[in-house]
View 1 (cartoon, one colour):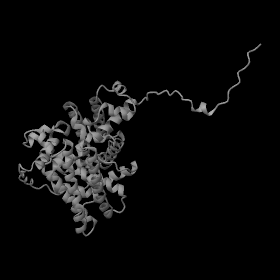
View 2 (tube, helix red, strand yellow; view 1 turned 120 degrees about the vertical axis):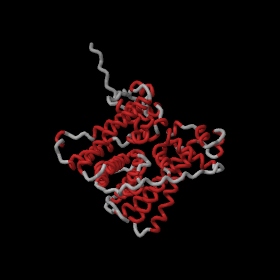
View 3 (cartoon, helix red, strand yellow; view 1 turned 90 degrees about the vertical axis):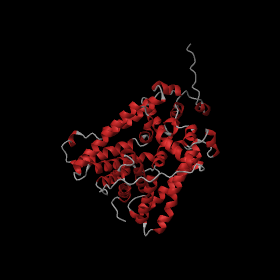
View 4 (cartoon, one colour; view 1 turned 180 degrees about the horizontal axis):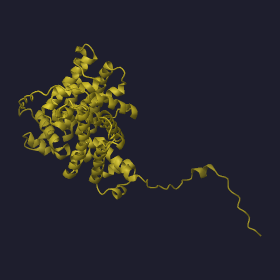
Length: 417
């Protein structure tokens, strides 16, 4: 006799709730995911502020799994930094069909390609802008060589389009253009890719076709103001910023700062500041408050938004030229400020940018608030980029020239107000 057939048991809710064994498969692009996550982390928190465990947690994997792909944090850092610089160089290579095109279309194609590459790598590009100095010397030279080759292509195309320019003016305009594009790594203003690309293209073309003030005699270097030894808190701020600019924040100890300020021991620093990070925050807060304090009087005394914005540009350039090291350190080391202070500083910066952006929209009502904020960030970044790439004391980077370039970016044209 055949065995009786077992009647199928109807499915129940309990069966649906039974745990299923989940098989986790390793993504085929795991290495690319690791590189992208690490670059974003390095850009946001600084190379020294990120551990392999931090990167692993972003990807929800173990640090052991991470080490299967990369032997060290530096290997990750190096690979992504050089990938970004290589992408910059690749972006300026003209396709064959444009080899014999007139200069203007070749320049515009190159500009579009650089912008597209920068937008595609926006979330990780802060690594390239502010953290690349922590590469080992040989790797840093490779990175700089790639960036310089990209710059030279743009500079050469500009020479063809505008043969009236001399070498100094071409250098300034090319550097300002690349600064405007790269500035999108410094903020998180959100907008559609096509809108952002169009906005950057318009700003860059305005820069490339602008005329700069004549190069005058090198400005006289103002005599250094000696801080009285009794003002130890001021002396500590100044010496600390000098050291952070020269060596990088992670490579400066409290003992180094104490010695530079003439204090007998590091313990003396703690009478004025709770930590090295709080000292950095105090310097940044002072600079942020200076920018904030200028806004109200400039608007109140102006006949309109263009005049107010011109006043703010001049005040900002003057203040930044007087504190060049602090301006650079702010961009490069903001991630090292204690979180609670960093939140305050970011809020002050956001409010300052919003006030500037309102004035920009007052002059250019066709722009959205977001577009105006992007342009404000580009104009502010220009001040530090021009000096650090072309030489802070070079006469071709004078205040009148930087002011003119900020005006062109914000107004979309030159202004005489």
